Image 1 (cartoon, helix red, strand yellow):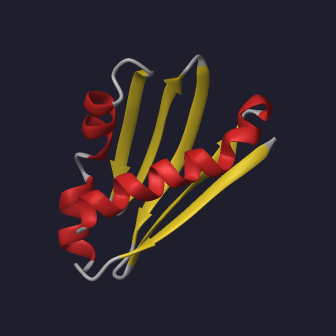
Image 2 (cartoon, rainbow, N blue to C red):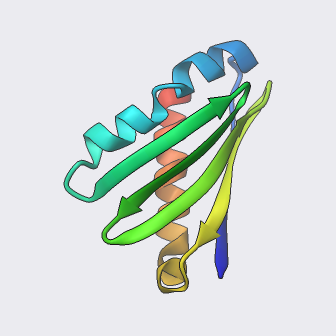
Image 3 (cartoon, helix red, strand yellow):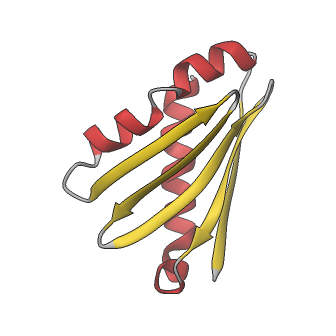
Length: 100
């Protein structure tokens, strides 16, 4: 199984970044409604365990909000491995948008 890993730096501090990212899954669900379903997630302090179905593939992962960066990682189904770069870039773009 392949993995994805994204780190996005920010200058907001942990509390502000966390406040902005607590709506991350809602934004994904709204912006990508035709492609994404079964969105779920649970925050525990500064860590979000999440999952959703995208184009029929189950995607799971974790987001950790630190003082100067946000890390997102998780396993990818083998069939999605060829799209890893695109998936990572989409995550990077969405996080950058929320953290600006």
